[in-house]
Amino acid sequence: MRGVKHVRLTKDNVKDIVCCPGGLEIKGKELEGDINQTVTWRHKMLEEGMKGFVSYQHGVPRGFVEYMPAEVAPFPINAPDAVVLMCYHWVGTNKTDHLAPEKDLINLVIDEVRENCSSITTLGWDHPTHYPIEMLKELGFAEVETHEYISLMWLPFNEERQKPTLVVPQFKPKDLSTEGRLAIDVAYSNRCPYCISHITRIEKIIKETPGEESIRFHAHHIDSREEAIQWSVSPWNWEWLFLNGERVAITSSEKIHKLMLDKLEELEA
Figure 1 (spheres, one colour):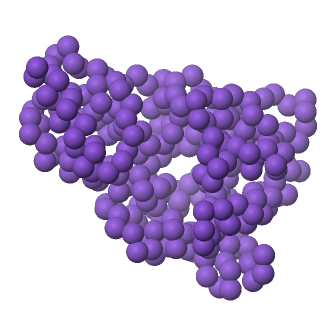
Figure 2 (cartoon, helix red, strand yellow):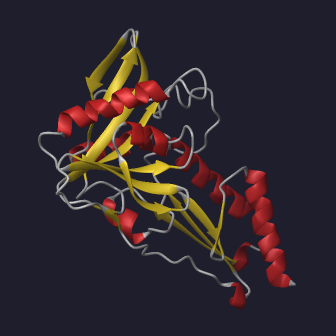
Figure 3 (cartoon, rainbow, N blue to C red):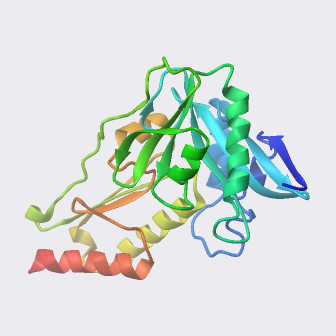
């Protein structure tokens, strides 16, 4: 693409990532919570071995890619001598024009690690624009495991290498319906501004919900590899919400509030 410059990710330019405060991805959006945590988290990850690039088009930060050794990456993936492609994004002008520059960003990682690592692994989604499986396949990745809408993808540089695996889910959400209580388990990560906003909204909703004494609420951080394994569910994500063991979508505050009220009414019936 014209006018694009890729700069190695450092603590000095991490603030230019499009998902950090002031970035194009979240500019003008009404997000709640301390979005600055996205920068703090990345500083810590850089100290632990994360690498990547920030992409500028005509001087404007528009994209980024991050990767990390599998042994320390905050994903429940076992992949000896491999790196995990963690996150990549390019802010385009429509729903699909980000795909080509995102492929360029991933190719930067492939070229950089090919000589020193056995493979690259990542998670792909059965979605046309969000970490799409089909785009990863075009880059040479193969599906190793599939769990509903998420697949573990693998790009080996040596076919004799052992395939990566996802850790068997370690966490089972609580169901307290037999006690007449509502168990709310939610996971979030400071890697994503939307996650921070969602957990902030959910905490507010719970405080505003009548019958709060009947609610048992636990928020689970997924900011490290240990936490990614400890709070792993299937299909895996760094953000999820369970109401008495039932996984529900994190949507608008109104819909989540209604779901909670409905659950509480069922318990009282």
